[in-house]
Length: 569
Image 1 (cartoon, one colour):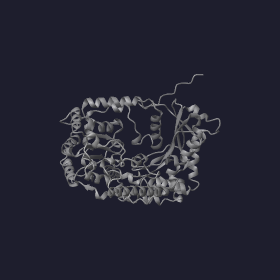
Image 2 (cartoon, one colour; image 1 turned 120 degrees about the vertical axis):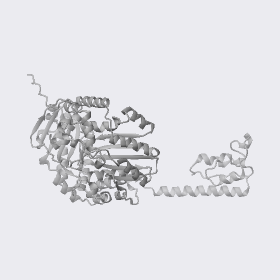
Image 3 (cartoon, one colour; image 1 turned 180 degrees about the vertical axis):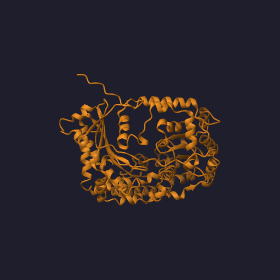
Image 4 (cartoon, one colour; image 1 turned 90 degrees about the vertical axis):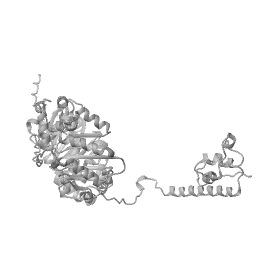
């Protein structure tokens, strides 16, 4: 019998090599020859149904009948046709990735109204079932924060937030509570920031009842264990001692004062005096004043029946043992520093620079156009103008960018920032200033506009990639008031971005990027920064009205200015 010969353009020469001989008295060892049983006829039929059968053992099936030869021929023909189909598909693939085309993405975000529940106990909850894993995730957003502190107890909210979970409960020491959570393989955390506190619980759905019992005790009867309070106060004092060590910390502190004012609540800094003054009684008073259902918004996601979880939440917050107070409105009286250059001395090789302009709130009608404008200017990474000029063209900084976040409660400032060698700080600053002026003078290109808008629209579904993300996003909107003002914000988000035109970008750039209000902060070697670079005749003092203010060094524990040492002659 003449051996079968296959074409050479096959996809797997390793498999095809066996087909030139095994069926016809050659090939590897037969299972029957090694004491193994020969495959049954049903097994043979099973093998024939698959193109990936072990060809090296086909000779074990004995003499090949004509019917089997026909079956093998069908398999081979199918393989060749499949290869032909693949060759045809390969011919249709473009030679460049930018030539690829995709069908339009059809995606609609979930509707928050479908998950919103007004609990009888007071809080609003967003309840989003998710059966993918046997886990439940609960996050409580609490209306409290740094803004409710008194000036003599700055740092109180931070300590209260850290110790709410880590300081034990009335019936459990801090160590016993931690051990109990470990036994349940559960995570419980707490904290208080500038404008909100959070308490979170993640655990197996089968342990939900026990987990909620622990959560209830943490919320209603925290111990604020004295030894834990001493430990956290000591850690806080140690961190205060280090806050002049890094130029980034100095920049953040001074920038806050310049952008919002020394007297604004969010720029107040703890000192050794305010931290040492905090007592356990202060923590207890803070807790009883603010930690109650009237100040809660809940995000719940995970493995549960919706109504069962709602009933559990009602029991969790029912019959609260104290009344507490409703949190006041967040103060919004900010003050931007006078235009000019502000220098803070720090002996480091690179200067840290921030350019600041007045900010915008996220519910401003201009906000979506501002988002696109800033993305083109400096927020879009390597597609942005600032990054391309400062890094790619001039090589003056590893990273250079701008941010124009919309504030939820008060305007958050525009900021462009970078780090560069001390002698090139002035030149890099002048380039950013050129780009700020250019985007306010001439329309952006169609390509820039389209690239920017796609960068917001295309990744949009990722904002709701998990049920926990959806629940958290909706709860945050409830907490900040966005849902009440604009319940269809996420439904309309992409449309609003897509409606931004070149004219809109130019208009908002001219409105919001007014360089006569520019504040420049530089942290680094003062003398080297002011020298400028010999190849670029730009002086930092000339970039913001000619005014240069030297910021004093400050004692890290008191934040009082340190008198400059007299210069030796």
